Length: 248
Image (tube, rainbow, N blue to C red):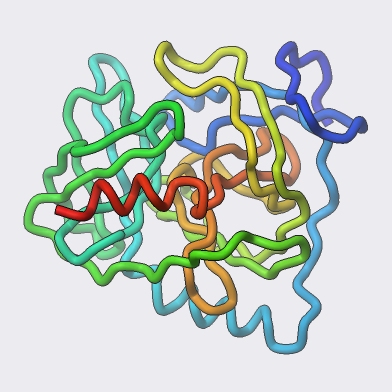
């Protein structure tokens, strides 16, 4: 585990420390550092659960896009997932907040111009609308995540450079973390997070966390820089905002 990282995550159990970064990817590999106590990655034990999650991932993965935010001297890559059939995709605010122009790239490699139509830095949530692209929306879970719940995290492989499917379990609820060197205007204090002890990479930001029923229960936002461990925003916490954004 890495040592000497200055920023401390709060509200977590004491233990060996590892760096934690915003789950996004930039060309220069810059990460926001945090310290965090991490647990070993568990494997779903319910009979057939892992297989079911893999099947769900296979069905929904074609709907996932890479969100590209081009700034004056940088390019941020994140993951987006369709929330309706009108070309609207949900991602994290920290993926798009520094961008001046935007586009999305589908799993087939097709590129579409896009714009940020809604964002909320305090929720680390953004809605990106792709011009000329329609995908089938992912179903939403209106219940809270539960301890030990089997989940699968989807990401854009173009954003992460790694396999896009991660099967894991929920091993923490109501978690808190503090970001000491986020960009101006970005969220620094995260609360009520879902912890998932999995190896999540930069570029996963905004990716959906799905239940065994194929419903979105969380939105990936933070990831361990070393080892395993990641955090997601509970969908239930931001669902009213998403519904307001997409009501028109």
